[in-house]
Length: 502
Image 1 (spheres, rainbow, N blue to C red):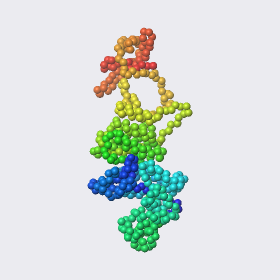
Image 2: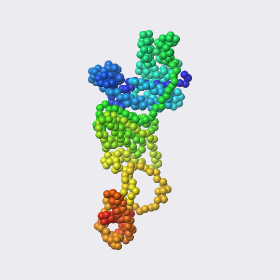
Image 3: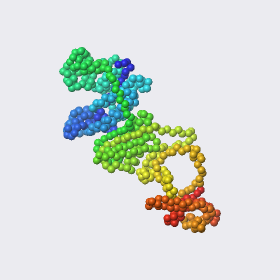
Image 4: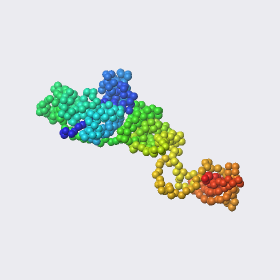
């Protein structure tokens, strides 16, 4: 062990209960117990401090729990615990790339190699306090122990003393460990019985035993335990690489059918995801909601605004409008939010330029319109590859980067105002060409006629069409002039004015 080694151990007790209450902030101040096992053999595997103050403990059966009327009973969720572990490892990875995870059944423990991080995060005490603050924002409670010896930091963090931050000075590991019980060393059942027969209860008593005699009685494991009790046990650090995924999952206590009740849960989950994204200076680009429904099916919806944002109210409104227009067809058993991250958007405005409208308002407005008219009727109109009149389709809104030089070299065309709907007129012909017509109670005589342009298509379908187009310059007897676009439906022999040229 070199003098430059220093480790911070993050330890969270009663992890099954904390993982369930992380997304249930309204239950954190109430007595709660977590049950595991198959009925009727369920037992308490984890509980809150308030439940423990009522006299409850691990191992109580469901019959014993039912005698406490004010206690809230929750079922253990291994998936929720896995999500909470991933969140804590991700949080620890923000302070060092070297994080080692120790798997425990009912607690969370990881060690962080913080050697060389003083310039970034300050001294170890400051780093430990900042780490606990970050963990607190995630809805979890933990403690941090810092030592130059790996096993000393682990043992102090697992100790029964109600500490939040404990810094062990280099060279004082044995003194700091002396009062701790042997349970912090994860003894086997046989070793625990042996030390109990010898009257050894603390690490200080274990450290005082002679090494050779201890080895002769319980083997090399005795030497290892004695070194750990004295804070001298070396450790080969085995780091893991925390994966950054913005995923939150929650199993509901009972099936949910009302959208408002679902959005209450989604609100808490969104808050956690946004906190994690903000810590890495990221924004949410899209959010997918996966609902586990009764009957074993799943239902997924994805919302993607125009620009990434961390505005929780905007996300909540977008998800609410989307699920309101596309509701699930069965009761909901579990909810999972999966977010894709993007760069935070910043717009540099000029000194005298007007304030631009917020993009989030446009996203919410479009979502409200989609809820009324449907997804397929909201977007921008794009011309289709056809000569049919009003041939277009609707595509989602997008911003194209057009070439300015191409736009400047485009030929100038006269503007035409479309008439919707087109107005039917009666046309007088001369030599198969328009001569005069009445439009809006005024009679016009044709001065110039350009055309006809014949078009037709889709003869292979029921939407067969054919038409001829005329561009006319017409004038009334009192000198009023118009330039119109005249269309003749060849199938019905009907004339219509579809537009006026400016």
